[in-house]
Image (cartoon, rainbow over all chains, first blue to last red):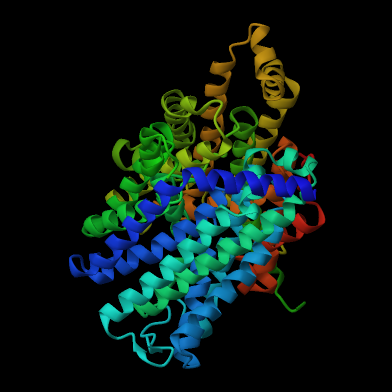
Length: 326
Length: 292
């Protein structure tokens, strides 16, 4: 087992040293663009896209790198949103602690959901996560004392980060969100390229073989699930502070579907795909917002188009053209 | 706890049984489709909704009543299913299960969005057919005729389906193709056509459930969306390996839900999910499932 692990680790190091320079460049370009973007584009829109991008990256860790299809990821985004909003509003916690509280809440729920869902494989996994997320939705709907029911938790105070950064300033808030996003993004990048990430990929490619090599795949899957849930929680908690709102929208199954769409459109199993997907989906929603239910129709059509015509997604196709994984 | 009047208790149990009938019809269709196509049909709820809408259209625009709807709506929905299988789903053969789920999810969104655009989110009423209006007093409860009809009719449809699949030659082909499609094809059976027909049939069952549901619930674009998630939980509990298992689990969970509504209404939305969680801990393969 030890040698196998080391072999996998070494091959991981070897590939990342030789072939990921272009990824560093792409990542740096992305970070640079995001630093300059708020001077050109409406910052609130960017913050929404960043929260959503982090959510999609966390989701991609499961669907793209572990081969686990969760159809209930809204549960983690939404529960963390509620937890952060509640901590900030009812208990008056500062934003950094409120967000951390949201991350913890999402991680615990992720542990429970993940422990149940990994007991079945493949398509059942998707159905179980969807059903458990729906259960959480009903809890949130029926516990107005905590969640505010249909109204949600409104007017959440943004407060001062670490006591001195006034988050009422839009630009300050933007750069805080950007730092949170980049931190989450880098953590996911490191995870994917670590020995742990290599084991996850081997589970994706061939789980029985990973088991036969001596890996306790259930523990790896559960850990990946909890990590993904916690990072989704980071996105959810940040979103609640930014928009000063936690509502049922974020725990509803449509949100779970949206993150699947984002990742599929951007490119499953690519590092940058979910980010690109998030910006496309959020802009699409912005432009189609006046059209009501047409948003749903367009989203459905994109799903069908992606599945039939380009399963690699935008970034996946680009990476294929360049001959390099992005 | 025991002071609940029998009227209320049996009334809720009957409603539970009716929900159970819908769970059974829908999970039966899902199981049949999954067996042959290896696709979890996320659009099942949308087909159920379309069944109800076809019934409403027929009444509204063609003046055709419930009995015609019971015949025409499943056929219309089934034919749409045939077309979709031929044009879209067929292209996914040999790909990961995931893509079938995603494609049908997209289909469900498109259908639901289109209907929502046209009819909003509120429901359209659909009257109980005159022949089944009213009810009878059984002494311990009042039994509305229409509800009795729904339970008995869906039970008959479920058992009929079970009979066709388990006891006829066509069913034998179907089961054989589920086990090993290539081999069955080598024997000269037109498996692709069998697959198309199976999808059409499974989807028609959903349409039929929609017609049955129309007079009980209102006909609304969102009626299938939430139902399908519960049906997924039912499928996880029952396991998709067994036809009879799908039927029994559907009715059983409907009853449990009815019971919960009487004794602890707050949990009635979530009880099926809780049962699913318990089953996953105790018997991960599902009540009737075979270990993968």
